[in-house]
Amino acid sequence: MNDIKVDLGNYKELGDSEQKERGFIWSTAIGLQSASGAKPSEYLISVANMNINGDITMNEAKALIDKYYDEKVNLKITQKITKNMQLF
Image 1 (cartoon, rainbow, N blue to C red):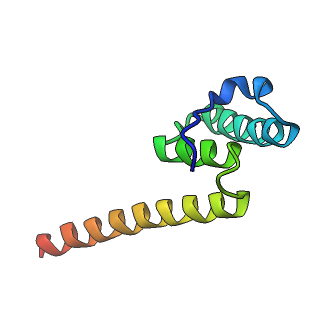
Image 2 (image 1 turned 90 degrees about the horizontal axis):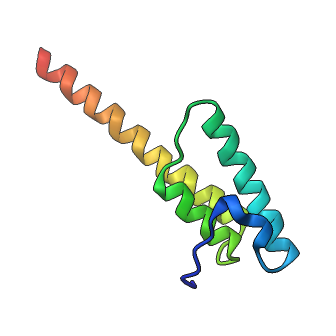
């Protein structure tokens, strides 16, 4: 992986057309997420940058993000169950 960081707001300034397209897709998705009041995680931005830079495919990005959020949800569920068990 390279260490190039991409400012998602400046995707139009990227090198090749595929990189610009990936930047546009991520910028749009994150913009829609922000418009609904959600703040993208640093992890999501990191994965977006890896995809924009061509280090990983969109399918790999989706798999990484799905795994990350599945683990976060599972952790929250486990914490709630543990907390509820302590009440008994």
